[in-house]
Image (cartoon, rainbow, N blue to C red; front, side, top):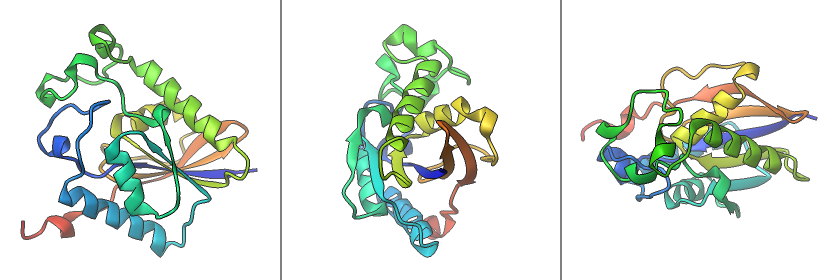
Length: 196
């Protein structure tokens, strides 16, 4: 039986705005970030999409985003956290190596790319196997979401143009232990920033 996972990236944070590397370290949502989550909430409302279960990374920025998306109770899950960037956490994004990062951050106390992919795949697979989990919301992070997409690239039925933007919605089908990306939505936030 097919199940549906909606995987969402958190809204803009202070560190996003200041171009700081933000993995396991955290910073709060900005006013724009909260408004972005409101746009994503309206996306779900206007389509009549409801969830039977909701999960968030343990990071505050993800929990706060989820609480704007829905008022339902949710579970915080460490496996949904962002890539661990080791000693590069909270440093300038100018220090990031060129993509793909591969195992670069492992040498500095962080995670390798394949580790992040596996962690996300294991965590979301275990969640979707739970009883009564037909339509699930999970809020995570840009790098972690991209790693999950790459893990299941062979099943991809939709394409995400560009990066995993703030509050991007990734819709996956889950069946027979495998995920397929069937829709990817980066919202247009231009109306939120006009006049600023």
